[in-house]
Figure 1: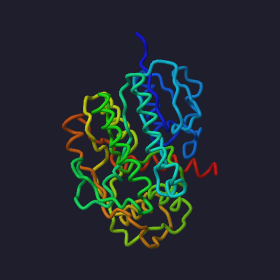
Figure 2: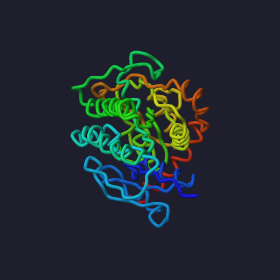
Figure 3: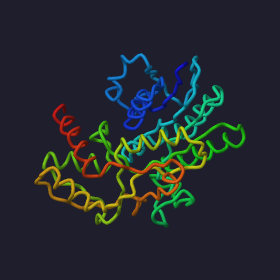
Length: 315
């Protein structure tokens, strides 16, 4: 039987590379597209000699040309951390709009199932808690985070338009905070920042008073949920994340304890439009996909800590 083929845009990124691994494990051939703006070749180095994997260096805001049949297009290309999308605001907007358009065009041409990697950031600084998929969000379109939030909101709208107008088979996953190996130490997100500061016994930087909350999902759980969504028939957005919520201050203390660090917590001004709360309502994922996270934060952090220790040694 002919193997199925998946195109993964942003496949050399943190999530994209784990997704490539999972698809190959499932017996699916993978074509990875990435221009390495924020992705890293190291993330896919182990796949480059795999006969079921092909890497193409490509900016997906340009025309995507694939000669082979394609069964799935998974659009994960985008800067995803505040430090990256504030550094590359135009590229972030372009990959969310033009890149999504090109990836949808490929899916339409190949009659493939399309999956959009959206984000909990479409909810902005939410006025309801926890956040369910029916919530329309509270987003500042002209604030510094708007380049990412609105790019993803537009990408969702464009995906639904292709579904409704062209009858394209589409999926939308709203990804909440995720962690694990292959995160960049310098990507600016709380978890890599806290762990790298703790391992160096530096002050841990908490923005605001630390009362804002986040919910952290281990990467293996997230990828499992994404695959279940891809293989389902659900065309409306689905939250995938871990509803176990913690304040940023308590999370910093947890990291200090885990690493036996001498670090102290210092407080800095909260960035503009930084969400005060973030917790997924995963009722839909449970009911439709039979999915919920299995890895506890304690277990996931232990595995991730070992990865960061190795990364720091290589610096």
